[in-house]
Length: 308
Image (tube, rainbow, N blue to C red; front, top):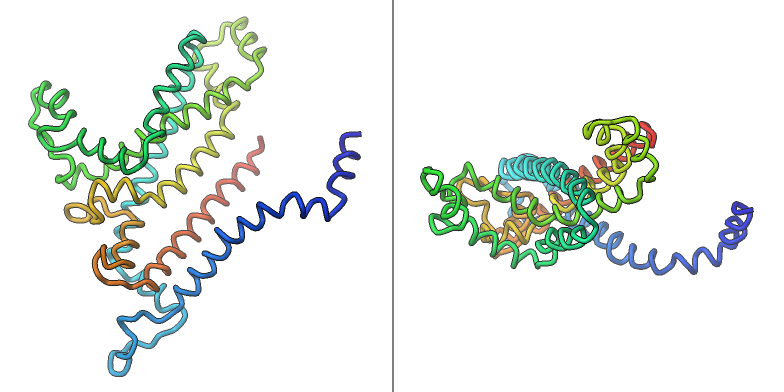
């Protein structure tokens, strides 16, 4: 009976189009149109080569800007930094959020809502405001981290945002700080959705905490872990405001914190490096967006082949 009702409901193509048309229109306007516009721009000739082709050895082709991007060492360096930034933030955020979700679930119900609200506070702030607060926390010798942790432990103060060894870890910690509360809430809801009888069986059989995590909690939330990982992947690749507020549109000392979006900003706009090379920036964005989409698709395919 349910299948017949569903077939009757969606059998009318007119009703289906009517119900989905708002989504399709917004999807086309905010995703399809910008995508094709970006691809078209990536195939155009850059202004810095226009009118100077004779004698330069440069011949424009639809893929010239893609070749320039791939051969740009700064672009490759930004991809390496972005990979480390995204990978580090995903691993730390998912691991920490999973632990916190279990911890909150084990608390008395009176305190669960309070803890979740406190964890969500960083995600409520605008990225620019959060980055400014984060900068004050890591700012030189007067920063809170040096004053209350590093110096009291007897170590020399660390100049977090000027030391190339610490710039990228600071960006990772900023992303972890921002998203841990949100992912914790998602995983907590997933734990609450696990049938209670599974915990009762584990209690009766005397299962250890690790056994509960391995046989109940992780299998019950792994689909949410995958969703959260893809969300953090897309957000990390597209991250700009946090790095911009911390590093001012540069990559920091020795480009140690140069992320891909910062590179695209420097190439595209005079406020970055003055190059105003929109075709090159568009080509780099198309390459990265396509690679990210393919990687996310592969993750979903592997998850589907592994079963539920």
